[in-house]
Length: 352
Image 1 (tube, rainbow, N blue to C red):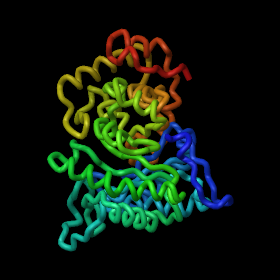
Image 2: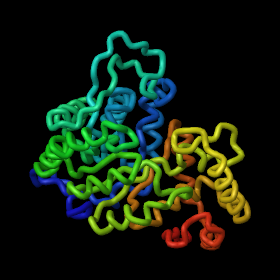
Image 3: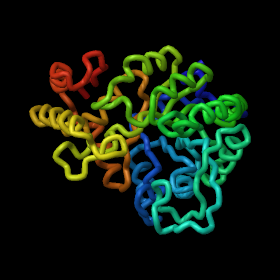
Image 4: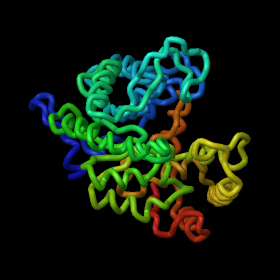
């Protein structure tokens, strides 16, 4: 059973909400930046950014305990409690990490990528008890009676290296059972993975019944290898995809002419810069903004329910919604395919 059938809660009739992939909307809000990702953000800026997302019609908000070590969940929960008292927003968070005290930490410096005032740090725990504890703590920080979607965070060899097999076994033997119980009881509507690689998704789908996957990158203007095995498997299992990182860490937003070019969380290698430059040339010939093409391309695939670009300010929220509405002529997509800049078997967006 997959997303369309599973994303339905089993609470009392007056609290029942049927959650379908379409309800996520094409554009979601990723809450890592309001957890002070890489740099500190004042509380009022974080609040204004969440408010802007709501005002521009975004109704799906994703967060995690890891983002600012609880700071992102606290800020998101506080703002949504005020602007969405009826809890109409769809909120996802993640399990697989618990927050442990670090009383001697230097809170002014980046820790695990976040500049957070919280005197804790995250540590991996995919056990049954760890997942249940994480879910309860997230509910408190988010100020919500229930959480709509629960993802297992950062499984896979890319993250865990030589500990990958041990962590995967811990999840399949314990954490997954906890997530399944939460879904089956109606405490959450849907469960899945929040990861950066497709291989772990295929592995877990061989053992688990998931509803959706939050995948960072891996199906973008620069990468379509997911068409070979991963996306067909998701279609066969009725698993929908929320695509994080549609700009591949920034280079599909800035273009190849920008200064500090990043791809996949690292400086962009020359071959990627050259490929982006070639895509940019086609964009310029057709009058298409590169970031508009990057946002719209993944959504043409039937399994992609929503994209979550990195947005740090109200202005970036406004820009993302505008880019999603930019009309892009069919000839643009055909030229990219003809020039082998995207795969010829990739579904193409329809003229909007």
